[in-house]
Image: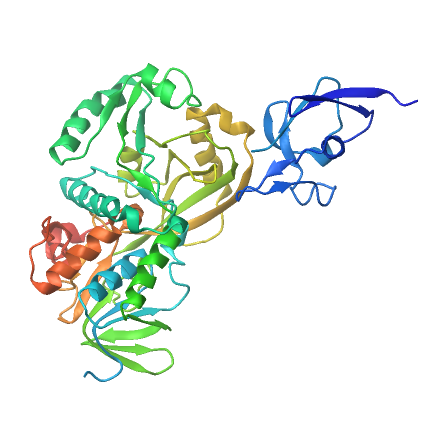
Length: 81
Length: 380
């Protein structure tokens, strides 16, 4: 049984398996990673740090590429405005 | 009916200045031709920040920037949304008491010209712009200043001119004199008047006393609300005034997208388009001295551009008399860092002068003939 990690995504608690990327956690939570300049909701595309569609606010820092970051206990994640 | 290829004015250069002149002429019902060798608005117009700013380096600079800014403001309702006009205001930031001491006299000077400005104490400055570092001495807010996206603004002027009948020739002018312009494809156009609005790219009139002044800009990812006004250090005038040394100054602009445009640098005798990493590092360091939080932001792109600088820091607007004996030749060049701000004002002055009509402000300080005074010919 893998360890479970609890993070907060757009204000709601989300439990994920250890080793889950923040991008995957946001997909599980059904939350967009960012909103485009014309107001479209966006989600990860490439999953390998190239496309920049997975940018979100992680622990208060905007435009983090969430596919390159693993979830940690107590992490807060928000959709990048 | 005039013959085809014959114009009242031919404007060489479809940057923002040339496009503004084309629109002014077309509005009067003139037959206008515009000749552009590259991409319209693809030179200094595309490289600049698009800060519409009143500056007071000299009384003539203050008069022109204030006049031209008033034209921008009265035109604001007509500008398409793509022009991204925003009246965000400028805050001139004073780092120390010495810089703050200048603010009161500048505010009075602006008031005499009809430009509203207010003095900010350190607390007011921090409240308006919380990401500025603590301990700054204060500043001056000029609420009527604004920003635009320059290529879109120039594109709008040109589209307006063409809607009113102006013709665009996407070709290089290889010769322009005595009412005739020869294009690289061999065709010839004729006009009562030829206007050179070519920025720093002019081989048509080698005597043109305009030098390239290289600048760098940086654009970040979107951080809405990170800064709310265009912020410029008060030391900017000191740094921009130097005409020999390379310099940097803190200058940051919020875009409608939430992106931040960060400048500025000035270099003479450098026409290499490549990024000068040492200069870029100095420029970013300077900005971080004012906004330490910049360190955590992502940069999307950096680029360079060339301002068209004159020795006395004023543009050349009017007949080329003094630089050429060709009475058909007119100039609208040498706007340095103020081409976007001054484009509508310069266009109005030039067209007024062509009509022999008095302008809202005197054109005299900008006439190319001023350069005939020998003392002023010796430029750096």
